[in-house]
Amino acid sequence: MTFSIIARCPASGQFGAAVASSSPAVASRCIRARQGIGAAVSQNITDPRLGPLILERLSAGRTPVQALEELQQRPFIAYRQLMAIDASHPPAVFTGARALGTLSSATGEHAACAGNMLASREVPAIMLATFEHAQGCLAERLMQAMLAGQAAGGEEGPVHSAGLLVYAELDWPVVDLRLDWVDDSPVQALYTAWKIYEPQVQDYIARARDPRAAPSFGVPGDL
Image (tube, rainbow, N blue to C red; front, top):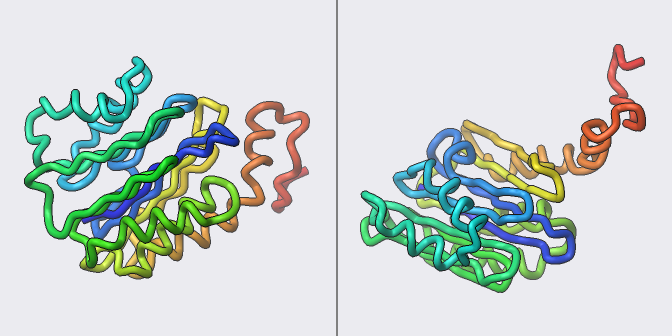
C-alpha cells in the first residue's frame, strides 16, 4: 500500500525519508529519522513501533543490516517491509514473506527505495536512479524521487497521502510536511507545499535559535 525512500546527504549530514500511500496519514506511521543517527521506514500492514526501534539500534552502534536482522525476531515481522540507513554503512531493506501485492526494492550508496502493492516492480529502481541524478538539497532530491515513482505508476491503486521528513544538525526536523488525505495527486501537492516551504526553512531555524535575529514573518499584524 506504499512506496517510499530513505536517504542521507554526506555533504550536509542530513537524513530524510519520503512516502506515499493509498492509506490516510501514511507519514505519521511510516517514516522516522533522528539527528546524527539515520532514517527508518516501517510500511506494509504497518507497525509504527518498528521505526523507532530501528533508530534505537542504529544509535547503539548496529549497522542498518544488523538493526533489521535483530527485528526479525519480533512477532508478525513477515507482514512488514522495513528500511534503514545510517551515516556510514550501506542502507538495508527487509521485505517479509507475507507482505502484500507486487513487491520491490532498490538500494544505492546513499539511499534505498521500497514499495508494496506496486503498479510495477520497476518503481523503486526508477526512484533510486532519479534520486542519484537529482540536484539540490536532500529534501528536493527526495521529492524528485517520489515524483518519479508516481509517474512510473506508484501504488497500483489511487494514492491519497504523502509525507516528507528531513533532519539536519538540530534535534528536531527542519522539514516535516504531511498531506494526510488528498483526493488526487498527493505527491504533486506535497511537492507544491515543499516549494512554498523551501525558501523559508532557514528563517524558521533562525527563529528557533534566536528570535532577536529572526526575519519578519511578513504577515498582517507582524510588527
